[in-house]
Length: 207
Picture 1 (cartoon, rainbow, N blue to C red):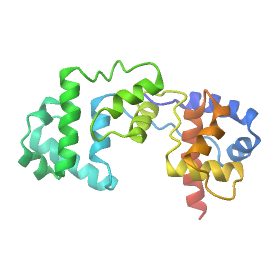
Picture 2: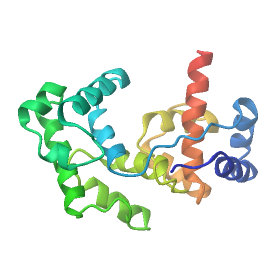
Picture 3: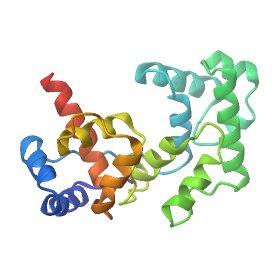
């Protein structure tokens, strides 16, 4: 599971002692709620289905898949489904291929989501080997489903925007700069990421 409320608070309090700008932002918007996803195959399948579509559309496809092929907790139901069934549920040919690839890897045991490498970069490499799972999706999975403390999705646009705003940059910092800036926040970069998204949402409400 993802980082708990207590873990977020402890980590953010520590970051606030290191970075006055984070302390000021924390005082302004408060602590974020935990963002937690179930660990395992279903969460990654949802990630693939949800790519480049709205949350509502992704949920509609998910419900159709359950109706047409059955329990989505069982990867065998995806691997045994016909192309026509997956298309009927609303999956494009590309996404159907991604879903089949993931299901096959999990069903065969080649991808063991209960025993990903402890090293974050090795775990990311294992996940991005799955068709349809890029680095951002892998990082989000490790942060929200496994609660890894130091995951830092520096390629995320909202994180780049909010790191720039929090630290007072005139322009949005690049992914490279965001990675460099966050080196001083180890091993609490996961909490910093959750806080950056929360700060971004707070900014949107103000706007």
